[in-house]
Image (cartoon, rainbow, N blue to C red; front, top):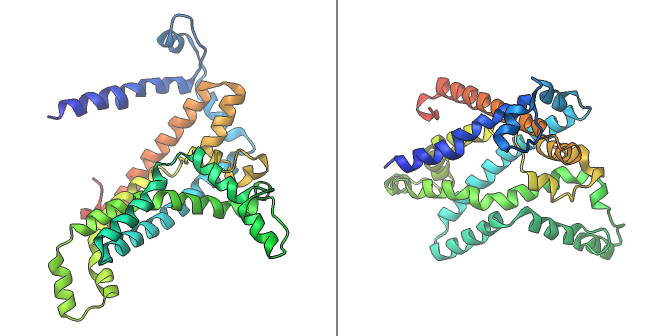
Length: 293
């Protein structure tokens, strides 16, 4: 029964790891094929990794990548759990499913489509927000040239697109909580808020910790579409929208250096693995039953 899953992991997860050797080579395409290209490419050691750290933008892209992800983890966790609790408390379950379905739709939209939605609001000429500002007699704002607004816009768009999908797991976990706990609490006179604080949240604690550990492992990765498509690759916004992924993409487009992009991916994966191990170790020391492994 585990054979299909094992084959899938070998072919699509473990076998491609051999390609990480490209991170240490100056990759050049060989007419004899891909494997010949890997074998015949010049070995350059750690030179490909220097590209990420020798640039003047190293601090900015690292700050943006980590900073945004920390905000996404905290705000995303709070909004997902809150949304799941609210949906679970709705008396009309059919209406709750309608709300849940409506909140889930944005998850399936491409960031390219979302970027056009955002542009209809923020367009300097005919954007909805500028029209509203003009109606109140306020000067229009060149949104795609003002970096100060974009940390908030990016966080809002990330939460809007992900809260529906993120609440599903918590909602399923809430549905599995034994209802006798709530019945006993109601008999003792507990309010809804007290039931949530004393029953729902403690029951969700193991799941929250596991998902938190997995999110920490992705803290050096960013959603490329969110940081590249939504700001429309505006150069004026690079200080607040440039992350490791977008920086590597622009470097790959301009230089065509596959070895450099592979080094960036290996660096992100290695750091993510280390962070998962450290976070899980800390959690295991505090509460062994809540640890991932």
